[in-house]
Image (cartoon, rainbow, N blue to C red; front, top):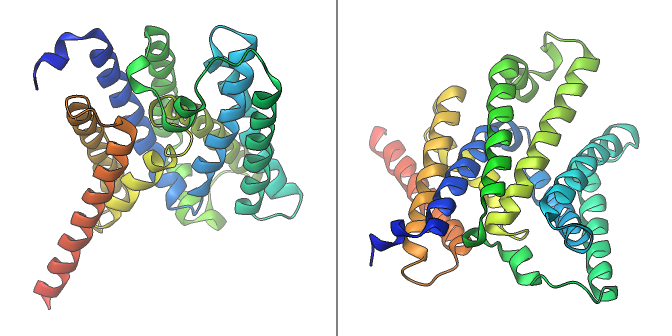
Length: 272
């Protein structure tokens, strides 16, 4: 029972896209969480919900509409936060709640909406297609390239904003770019774990890695390893046990975070 899952194509697809999403979300996680923008993931998930709703009604591949809507929303959130004297969390709240409300209104008015709201809220990992994998792979390459090229500036944007070595305009552009890439990744995350739980893919890896008090680069590496391993384990155990993979992933991450915290706590007391 525990090995036959690898004989199914849909499970292979689930492991591939799960691993890719786990990798890229963990890669950008420290730049978001340690910059006090954890709510960005949750807000963009709600905006992608609107994108999927519109996409289901208009086209055969709603993910493209969701990517577009999330990218626009990420720019709008940053614009409101910087130009309208509204703090970042409030800007996220305005855009995300408005997007979610519009999505629900469209569903209530549409007679042709044939997708389960539950699948949008809780994810549908086992319905992954080759098209999803291709899109995710492209986003993974873009994300890796972005982090490698702008690593120094991204690091300074988290820990040393005042002494960043590029102009203010370039720093703002970098911030917008990170937000937009995060939005695109989160759309894919919604496909896997749903709009309600996708923020866990961003938040948990860095929180777990931070318990070990290592360097920033080590935090990124630990985040990626933990994220990929927990993703694979949750997929592996959820299918035979007939559990929702998204919920299993969040619970597993919470348990790992608790274990890391207890380990860190015991380690500090031993040193005393």
